[in-house]
Length: 170
Image (cartoon, rainbow, N blue to C red; front, side, top):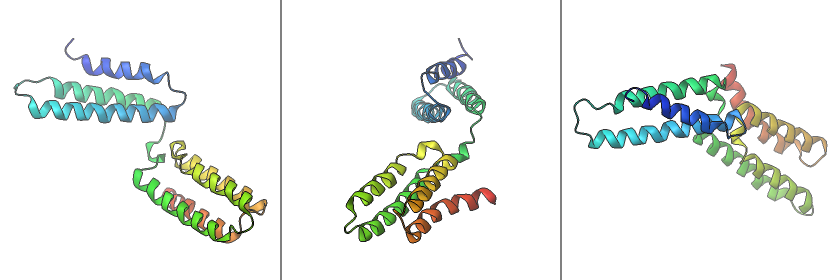
């Protein structure tokens, strides 16, 4: 069994990943699995007294196979939001919500829908940067055309997307 533990764990993770409905979820699952394996390895390493402990080799094998599974998904992991980027976007969206609250008087129904749309965006980071930005642009355009939003608020929404577009170009 020596030498196969890492591969077997990675194969088990792959098998469990088939229960997930899309590649984004599989990527998240593999990364969580890798993080957990790292924590387990670090805990073991701190307390292990054996000179020839096999955990290090198995951990490296596990990471190798998990990375292989991730690369087979053909997902660019740079497309996913970091927690910091999510927080920055949430702060910007909160500023937009604040602006909307100031304009809200007399048009509660329209603005309640708008607030719901913006709050929904905060729950869509799992889509990845490209798709999330496209959803944001689509919602913004739809609200601009329907007259729900004015150009000032749309400008704030576009600023969120521009930052990521500039990063992609450079």
